[in-house]
Image 1 (cartoon, rainbow, N blue to C red):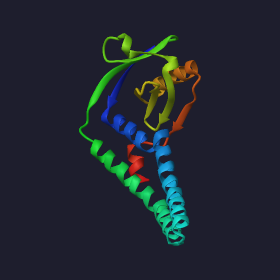
Image 2: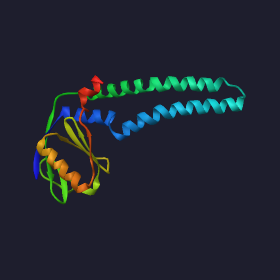
Image 3: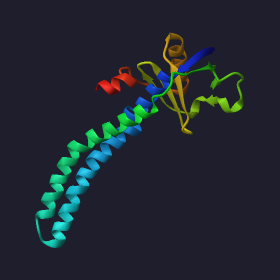
Image 4: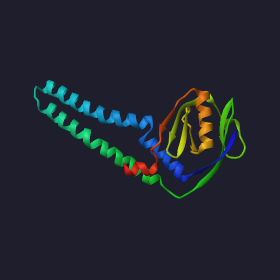
Length: 180
């Protein structure tokens, strides 16, 4: 089954919002950078205090860690929002074709070539956002498909053939990131 899709700049912005705020990598970065530095500050203060036989560094480490717990998430969100603002540009559109059959799926512009065909075992993750679907492949290729009923059926077919669940982030899009 072949579907004509039109990718707009809004679809790409939704994708970037997901990558910066909702993807597994973004969530892990937020978690480890926030709690990791908090714990490291306290441990470093404790170790320095044991070596210097004082208690000032432990207290300083705890204070720095607590400040970090509250300040870093705000800083990280602002940094990510600034990155999204820089990405926003002109309105553009690109017509593509999305084909799915029992052996492979393809995402191509006019004529299909071998490098535009993807076997189902190359799919690592499938996400459903508010306005788009995103298919992550093992070799760091991400395919963006605008969301409608026909593309939903094609994505379900890919999910069935790959035996991968569709992770749903149905409220995540470019505008919702700025409102949160």
